[in-house]
Image 1: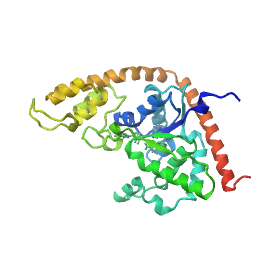
Image 2: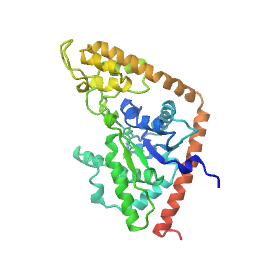
Image 3: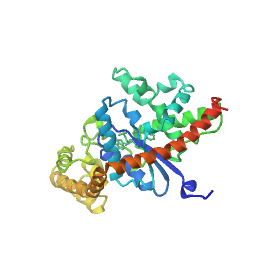
Image 4: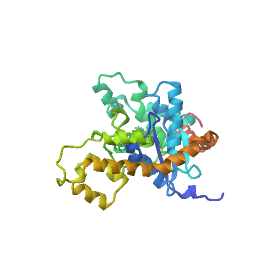
Length: 326
Ligand code: AMP
Ligand code: TRP
């Protein structure tokens, strides 16, 4: 058989839940890495729709959010000719493997998961889906034997679960799973939101990546600033505004302007312009795909075929290893 580039390249896998419009934190914390690394790695990028069901329980909303996320992925520059872009729900092996893992992991082990503990702390009654979330995520990852999984810092524990579950399986049965490593880029591991807390869809403190000019302006204008006097010297790295601004403009010149006491009003105007300049080519690409739903459908179909091919082989090996097939 002829060898292809994908035989020799290391693999990358990651995903985002279609639970709302991606924000600047999602982009710099995780999604940008998928684009930057798509040449170097054989890249699998997932729309984590089964995970999203824990949060979105409305048919039309789910369909819209899923479609929007596909457009976002393509808009940021993922090249469907180079990578495998697929919906998690198109690959049944993810849920099949989850069951196998469910029979291995214990309830106390799963009770240590942050998302579950947070729900309990808030007096919520977590669903089985939420409780099982890290096991499904371990399956997402382990089916593909990726070397790296680029994510933001809030996902670190989930990758640790994936490693622990892989080890447990490998020890109980046979060495089928590679232990995955997270790729967390230190500078952007937790991008702050407009209020200075972690930028998050659930905190209402986001700067949307694909917002309109008005939405971007509104978000930037709401970024928290303290009441320093004009021209007072400050360390830019202590300012939420600069922490967000430097993602779009990392020049020494900007930094020195902030150090010298650049007024917040002027800084915000500059940031709005920098964001809009940054996203303009992405918006254009997004429009191209938005206008061609057939092409988008075809991309997802090809992605599903490729992902199923890889995942089914792994699942068959697992079925063999546990004695479900001979
Ligand atoms: P989610 O929207 O929760 O599916 O997150 C998608 C990806 O974005 C995950 O890898 C998260 O870790 C990452 N992410 C979310 N919020 C932030 C943030 N404020 N800073 C850095 N990364 C983030
Ligand atoms: N749990 C991740 C998040 O909330 C999304 C996700 C699901 C994921 N499956 C994955 C990320 C597999 C990396 C690998 O952001």
